[in-house]
Structure formats: C-alpha cells, structure tokens
View 1 (cartoon, rainbow, N blue to C red):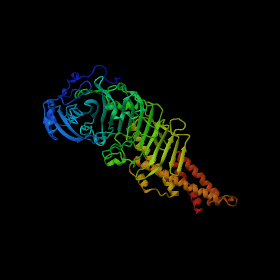
View 2 (cartoon, rainbow, N blue to C red):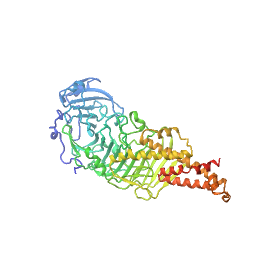
View 3 (cartoon, helix red, strand yellow):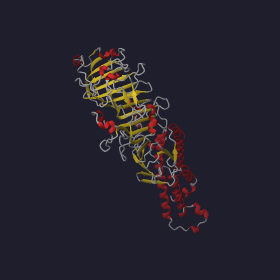
View 4 (cartoon, one colour):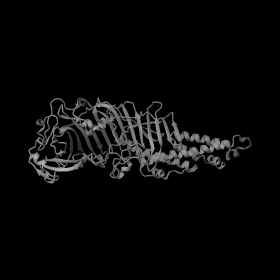
Amino acid sequence: MGSRYRRGSRVSCAETCHAPRSHPLATALTATGGLRLDAKPWWEEATALEVGESFEIDEGKGLVRRETFEDRGGKPQDAIVWVIDDDEDGSVSEGGDRDSDCYVADYDRDGTVDRMVDYIDSDGDNDPDEMDIRYFVDSELRYCWFGMDLDDDSSMWSLSGYEYGGPSFFESDPYGDSMIYMNKLNTETGGWLPISECPFAFYDTDGDGQSETVIRCSAVPISYDTDVDPDYANDYSHFAAPWNPALRHVGIVNVRYGFDIDKGSTDESPLHYDFGFNLVGAVPYEYPGMEHVNAKRRPPQTTIVTPWADLRDICDAYDAKETGFSWHEESDDTIDIGYGENSDEDRRWEGVFWTWERRFMENTGGPGQKWNVRREYSTTPTNARELYYSPIDRRIHLKHGQEGWMQVGHFAGLGALGEIRTFDTDGDGYVDRWEYDFGDWHRVAQVIDARAEDLVWDVDALSDRYVNEILPEANAANRRFMDAMASRRKYDADPKLVDAANAESGNFQRYAQDVLRELQYADFYTHWSGVVDRAIADQPMDDLRQLDSDARASQRTSQTAWDLRRLLSQIDILYGRGELEAAAKLIENSEQTFRIVEADGE
C-alpha cells in the first residue's frame, strides 16, 4: 500500500528544477507556498498598464497584460496576468495557448498572486493532457483543482477568468473518459495531499464519447466532526484555510457511484444516469499507485489521487457503514438542475445521488432531486455492492435496505400525486411491505415471501437484463392489467399522465405506467367495492331458496354480489404480490360476474 502522502523532507524547487519545462523556476514557491509578483523586475511597468495593454518579457518567454473579467462568483476583477510560454512556441504573440502555457493572475494588481492556470502537454503532441487551477490565499498556495484528459479530446475545465468557472461543471468535461480532483498543499512536507472531491472520475464504457459510470470520492480528515461539518468535502473554507494537523490523516468518507443502466447516454441525451450508491465510511486514503508524478508539472509535481483505472474496483469493495441507493425514475418539474436541451430531465453530471432529508448522510453534496427519485437506505455494514430483483414491483433494489421512499408527482406537467414507502419488516434484507398513499387512496401490500432474486454485481450484465427483460416485461404486464381493468371500468385519466405512459423512453415510460396503473386500480377497486356494498345493502335478506341455480347465477343477488366481493379480494391479493398477469386473467374470465352485479343495479 502507498503512504497517505509523502512525509519527511520537504519537496523543494531545487529537487524538481530538472523538470523538462522551460521555466519552472519562474514560479518557484516559498516554504509556505508563497508567490508574489511585486518583486519581479517588470512589476513597475505592469502597474502602469491600461486595460487591454501588454508587453513581452524575457522571463518565461512571457507576456504581461492587464485585463478585466468576472470571476466565478460574478465579481469584477481588474488583474495583471503573466503568461509563461513553457514550450517556447511563440504563443504569447497571440496571447497564449492551451498546450504548454501557464497563466499567473493577480486579481487586485497588488503584487499578490491569486490564481494560476497551467496547461501541461505531457506527451508533446501540442494539446493539453493535464491542467492545474491553483488557488492562492494571501499570495500563498492553498489548494488546486487538477484535470486529466484521458480520452484526448483536449477538454478538462471551463474557466471564469482564471478559476473553475461557468455556471457549473456541465460546461467542462464530464463526458467520455476523464478525471478531476482536488489536492491541498501540505506545508509540513511541501507536497500535496488529497482533499474534497478526490477524485471525480468519468468512464465511457461503450466507446460512444459519453460517460456511463461516474464516481466521486470525498476526501476529508478522518477526525472531522460530522455534527459540525456534515458536508466538509464541499466546504471551500476548509480548503482555503492554512494547513492544520488534522489533515495528516485523510480518508475517503463518502463515495458516490452512479450508472447509466438503460444505455440512454448519447450525444443528444448526455449524462443519462439512472441509479447510484451513496456510501459512507472512513477508509484511510492509502492506495497503490496514488502518487501521480508528472515531471512537467510545476512543483509540487507529485499529486495524490486514486488511479483512474483502479477506482471502480476500489468502489466495488469500499467498506461502507451506511448505504444510500437512489434511482432516477422521472424528472422533477419543481426544479431545473439539468443542462442544455435536456435540462428539464434534471440529469446531473454528478450522477444520481442522495438528498438532505429523512436520512442524513454526510458529505452528500448537492443539488439533489426531491420528486420521482426512489430512495433506499441501509445501516448494514458492507464491503460489496449488493442488489436484488423483486418480482413484486419488478424493480431492482438495494439488498439490506431497511426502508425506502419515493415522492410521486410533479412530472409531465402534473402536480403532487402521492408517496410510496417500502420496508423490510422481518430483517431478511428484502422489501416485504409497500405503502401507497395517493390522496384518498391508501393501499398496503405486505408479503410473507419476498421471492427476491439476488443479482450478481456485473453492471454490463445488469444493464442487458434491465433493458431486454425487466423493462419490457414490466411494460407488458402493466398494459395487460390496465387493459383488463378498462374492459370492466372506463377510467378517465389525466391526459398528461396518459401521454407520459405512452412515451418512447423506456424507464420514464415504465414509471408513468406504474403511476397510471395505481391510480386506475384505485378507481377500479373503489368503484367495484362500492357496487358490491350497495348490492348487499339492497338485498339484505334475499331468499335464494326461491331461485334455481341458473337464476342465482344470472341475476343480481347477495350471492352474486358476494362472489364479486371475493373476486375483488383475490385480485387485490394478486395485485399486492405483483402477479399482474394472474390478476388480469381473473378480471378477463369474470365478465359475467361484473356485468350482472352492475347491470342489475342500474
């Protein structure tokens, strides 16, 4: 195992100035990470520049200019920017380029460095392979965002001025194969240590240029106080603060692990993640190969990050003391957290992850979707990602999930509809109780035999089965049962819900079907139960002795009404067990019972 980070002697500039870049000494740091511009021989000339003016200098074969821009927070900045031409290709004559140039920015023109953006061409092919965005506080380097272009599309970070920018990371590169991560400067050793999102990694598993798997690891001091800092990994005040001893022992305390299971990620519909794990633990940041060395990086040259190629295996075996499981069933009309032409689908570059309600899980981050995301929660410690298939609701669930919930509604222009809750009441690891609350309709399905099928943790096989078997079979069962109910009782559904249930998208369509089916069943069961109640009330003491068997079977009596009551109970039991085909068959084969009881009562 590798160490948490380099310890012992400080990594000095003298030890790394052999790096094959032209000007590593030009930006040498002090022992505390300090870097200033006001000691440069050209500083006085720089302060005299007007906005838009510039001059070239010998140091770094560079360019010094004055420019104005807005930073990521929208704050106007009036800056001196020093452009260093590391590969000496003359790029400064055009203002600099993005393969081997470094940009040092002094936001207030006071001689203190605020940001440094460094593009690194690792393989000499004249496009960037790595990218540093270094953040200075009081002219001392505190932390850095690193980017790795793993699919050679020359894309990593978008910028606002000289820092991570744009409205979000959507504008950067969460597409294809790539990795970003944060490290903090360890002023005890002069090296880097992992902090915050370390890493965010994206995987294009089918070679289409889009990502189908996304991982975020939260690296924080293992001793952090969850009551004081429940979202430490997303609190920039910790990263911008000076070094403190608690940072000597950093661990991965949260993993978000998301997947596109229905193979929906395309150029037209990117970031089509369907489900994700939220894993909480306290695992020391100690992994083979985590010391990533780039000799062309400005000192410190060794960053600390889990290897991209190994990270999925690391997450598959992560020791979690709590597990959250989220499934993106549909979009949420109450928010707008998607991007581009598909923003209304609320697809996030971070995948599908946990939310700050009901069950709080540290370092979850945000934003999260509230409506139409199925949540399941487990406190069973595990070092495996375990799922199972339930034939009752025909869904994939988190094994050992003791409880779950989903707020239903606010999709396809609809309002709030209700909530579905799930529970494992006998502690065997499988859901055995479903509670449906939809306005005046309340239904509980409790089963003795969950009939659950454990699934092998193989995402590709899981995807194939979900797309080719689970979704089509669920849709077919829904259709048959809804058609059977409609043959005995016309249901006037909301046209918006009907349209959603007939949409082309498999996962969204299936979810809308399930909601429509439940509402139709509420109407069906309530109507026919009322018919039965009225029939029995109308004939409290009918003398069946006066009727022969044919008459008893062909006209409305308390017996035919009771037959329908019994039939409704049988249908309800089958429906609660998820046996929709059998429930549909009962309805289809009972035409006479339905007809007699209702027709004679009109």
